[in-house]
Image 1 (cartoon, rainbow, N blue to C red):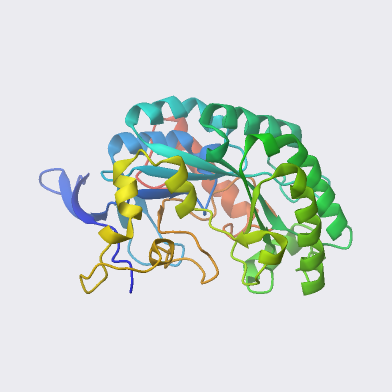
Image 2 (tube, helix red, strand yellow):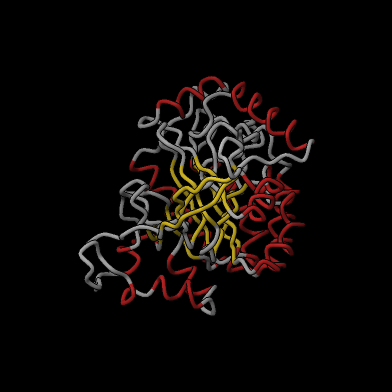
Length: 351
């Protein structure tokens, strides 16, 4: 059985070439928006998002080509924000609240300062302070700590990573309920290897199975003091013996727990209300039924619609899969910033 997709609705958009100045397109109208796996919208494009919420829609373009997809916010109930620096977006949260949207943050908080893997993120102490500030505002269940990805080099050992995680976790564990981590995946993604090499990190490598075991054992010991829910993102190995579950960043369980008062969201998550492509109600596990078909088989996220755009994230992390090159990102951001200064926000991040 298969999820039957988001509702599609007619959407009127401006078009100066049309006699009426408007044309009608077919748009998807998702309940859950991912913002974004492709770029850091809270850090760099928060003003764009707020302008597009006022307009009521965005245009999304696949990095692999094809026709653009129009995304209407008419049915949207929940935003899942992915960010390494949500500080610039915090002033916009009051407006989101007034508009009636629900949201939570997947906050990637790594420590690769000595290696300069993340050259444009704020200093670690500042990022930790922002994490705590955000948790104080939203509640610790709505700010998820991600340490992503875990990278080994000739200078970074498993013990080094565990120590870095300990230093962060000892400070933020009271302010969150969940830690999601991932092991770097280099060999499957030529772009990741190319970006690491170009960034001077050619010695970065994946974990061996014994190193995975060593890391998980050490993390389980650390978590005795923290009591966090531990999950591994897009991980095929069974790590349950270490108290580590399979990661679900856009999480069925989190949404049910944190937004139980949102009737449309709960109806969407309730398996009895879901229909298969044959029109018959499904009786399977709802989280499995709602698995995002656009993600890897090992990803357990439920369905959402991403609205980001590749080659736009100015953090310029050397391990990034979504940036073609620093030069392309800088060129794209300069274009966006010029329009931003004029008060112009296009229906996609880049015109």
